[in-house]
Length: 265
Image: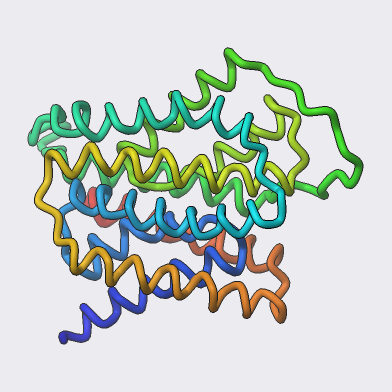
């Protein structure tokens, strides 16, 4: 095995460790690891990322279900429009993007470059969300209310973004659940994992019909990520997750800027 491949598989483990340590955000590393360390085409990488993100989130969601932290009604209202949008995006929208998008000042923006640039912008937005943090969690229970039209619109938007870049979108889902469904922060984080798992795995089905999937590679990569979640969960007992989240946010910001620079230059 080449050194670069070894780094790629160590990256898979790191993705899980970050997810286990801070409860989210690690999936934003999946596409860069697949593209830059394992030389996988960006379209295929975003597809593989959906599977990795979906399987990893499902592990976390099952754990939260045991703790009775998942609000199934909210998850259903949000997940249905989200998974319809992500499936449609992967099956129809992504294949419809032309190989040559446009030429600006002599620079040709191809499909692969366009996807990576869009992904990098999402990384920058996600990093700002992680650096700012969510504030202190409310301890008292609040009555769960539903703004159905806005939840459905947010579900569709998150589904389309997830479909294009292959990331979980927790940084968009959690604020939506807190603001639009009035869920306490802990329940919002737990419920978001179930939503991410459902929409990512259903979105991946859209790719199975369009792409040739290397199942052996994908299962090994995903298995390492899931192992990393348990390792991260163990390390979480010794490390301040909130400080780590902000530090990881700065790392994601630098990565996003690096990807923009690399693809443009």
